[in-house]
Image 1 (cartoon, each protein chain N blue to C red):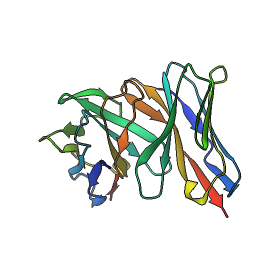
Image 2 (image 1 turned 120 degrees about the vertical axis):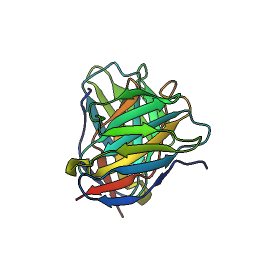
Image 3 (image 1 turned 180 degrees about the vertical axis):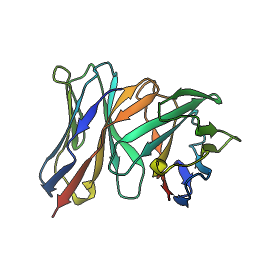
Image 4 (image 1 turned 30 degrees about the vertical axis):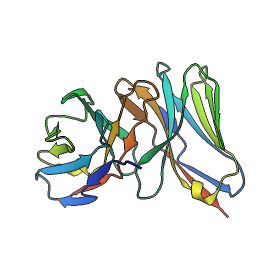
Amino acid sequence: GEDVEQSLFLSVREGDSSVINCTYTDSSSTYLYWYKQEPGAGLQLLTYIFSNMDMKQDQRLTVLLNKKDKHLSLRIADTQTGDSAIYFCALRSGYALNFGKGTSLLVTP
Amino acid sequence: EPEVTQTPSHQVTQMGQEVILRCVPISNHLYFYWYRQILGQKVEFLVSFYNNEISEKSEIFDDQFSVERPDGSNFTLKIRSTKLEDSAMYFCASSEFGLRNTGELFFGEGSRLTVL
């Protein structure tokens, strides 16, 4: 299956921007997703991007897709302490989603 | 807001025992999934289920695993004879449209399985 890689940890100060990166190997996926997992909770879809787009903005969230480099990123503007969570990059693969290991985002006051 | 619910939240079992994890998907959803996450590892796809049959399964989903929709509301994952390496958080998910369109999956909070 596809290989989806993410860095494991990111720490930012409240009010700064966070950028979470994801690289993947197979470029056939039509949709690419960012899911968020808060402590003790299930995964929640944050946003997604269609593979023919380069960028998608949704309030504080900006998704960038570089198909040539097979690189997906999630930028969170004005990061808040409530944004502390694990963020998963995921790609569609048949009937399934192929997830990365997740990036733990810690937002410090 | 409708949500996917899973029971139990945590189950401890002895190796070789059978375990059934239960899920109640969102009521108008037609596609159901099980994923698992071993501690420190990625979330892995196990199986998808639609129209009362398995639509896709991963290589993890071997003969020890089975899924069932015994009634109109529950969706279960059975592990026949648990192994130590089955210890993981098991997530149930459901979807209205499968992975067509945006393919949003709604996940439950997970059932943590500990095999001793």
